[in-house]
Length: 174
Image (cartoon, rainbow, N blue to C red; front, side):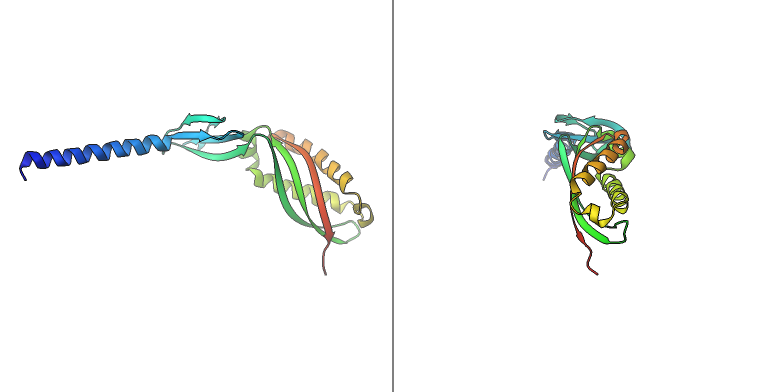
């Protein structure tokens, strides 16, 4: 093959590789945030901005998505074990319904939804530990209201609004 033909072939291959690389880079930079979510974006490890639903651009390799949070009501299911005031072991499952009002505070100050679960388990253990078994039986609604009241004061600083709490419990097996 003549020299100029070989150069032309390598030139075309180089241009195709360049076009493919540019297309790949541009494709990585386009973000589509779904309806009902807010995404947290960091640039070089520091908060850059919150992305609302729609089409957005980010610089690949420079910015990254670190959190995806729903805008509306969400539910957190969890399992817990605890002791009543009179020393009876109880265990159960609970569901907390909440609304995220400030995803920035939730992500950076509380560490995401996992932090909510830890605080909820602590508050629940504290409330159940103050009650005797007789008051716990049939008192799930009152307990749920007390827990939501306490969580409202706690979560106010973290951009979360607790809406309701339901609880199903049973005695621990010996």
